[in-house]
Image (tube, rainbow over the protein chains, first blue to last red):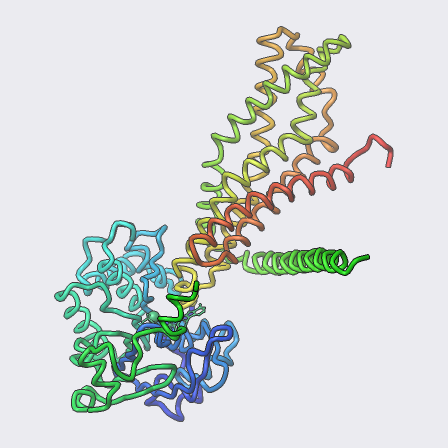
Length: 280
Length: 270
Ligand SMILES: Nc1ncnc2c1ncn2[C@@H]1O[C@H](COP(=O)(O)OP(=O)(O)OP(=O)(O)O)[C@@H](O)[C@H]1O
Ligand SMILES: [Mg+2]
């Protein structure tokens, strides 16, 4: 039976320190261009945040890394392999080493919390049921929800569902975990706990974490490096110290949370007045 | 021809052409999809408990509606049949009339229609919702193919359930006819069963009926999983996909029934 480690392709030895690399990636849905020339590299063993306003393309970046979308141009390299060039089998092989927390949880609604987390373990390993049980309870304990094991996801609150989804994302102890908005909908206590959990998992297991978030304060506390995305480009990047000290307008707008600034709050649209009086 | 009329005609033709093309494209998609389901079927066999679960959902949970409908259809058939047969003094042929109608036609067709609206719609809605809530995406990201894990078991569950349901439908229908014909009207029980036994051929009646129900079961299952899988990932998308499953399945059953009946028909000596 397949094991759960990320296969190390020969090419990976060329740059063993880089887990994920995007090189001048462009992408769009239909006519609409979402990413225009994203370049980033995510070092192995680090926690890297991708920040940006709503609709700036953060989730899209994760989907490109996971191979669910193919870029229009540019390269997406994960563990030394070019993701868009992988065939289905190789892609699935790569994904075994990958965990993803979906923005909206995406828990399997016809299974219990326990079965959700056991899902990947049962699909990809031949572990005996007792061991699976222990592993699942460990993951649930880590997110503070061991008591919810027999519940269906419908019986969870939004924040609880998110934490269960997080436990599921790390069920197979992946080499790379992508968290899409791990802090959304969490109360301040769980928020701090989840932030620390991501950090601890990363350091204890030597995994690489990509955290997509709006939450500047929480990420400043726990990440190693941050990218700011706006209008399909990387507009700023740096370590938390650099970000704090930065006086780039984009960064300041994010850190200080102002609506007016270089990052537009509004989606592109005709002028407001024109729209309002369009019936005249 | 005035230019307005010409433009109108051109418009109609264009719509017709576009509709036809869209239909053929969709048919092609559905066929490729069905082949992909077959390719992924060994996985459904390996994880047999998933298929059994779907067999339960599609089959066992459809039992009530199938059994009750079968009973009533049989009873009505007996009343109507008796009314006609008695005019020719042939009321003792009621058994064979009912049995042949049910086994050849009504069993597979009506059970198929009920199955499409009871189980087919449920399969479509479930898969569509899983898609809309990104559960299928999540599965893909966990390196598990939804075709093998979600679609194939539902397809096989439906395909296996349908012939069994059709057989039960016919059985209950014959029982209903017996209740009405023998117990209520008072036809001789020996004649009722004896004529039926003598007049129903295994190869040409029973087997053909089973073939029909297999074909309908396959069609409904393919349509149900396909519509769910290609549904727009929104609430409206799922609801329109569910409706489509019922409508398309029903029309497909009726059309296939005609085609199959033509092939199986012996009366004209073709
Ligand atoms: N399936 C899709 N089809 C068409 N356009 C899409 C699709 N998904 C996203 N988009 C568009 O792509 C852009 C980026 O979407 P994306 O989901 O990556 O944003 P995001 O940065 O994750 O936003 P948020 O923080 O709100 O989750 C948006 O403008 C959105 O309208
Ligand atoms: Mg997003």
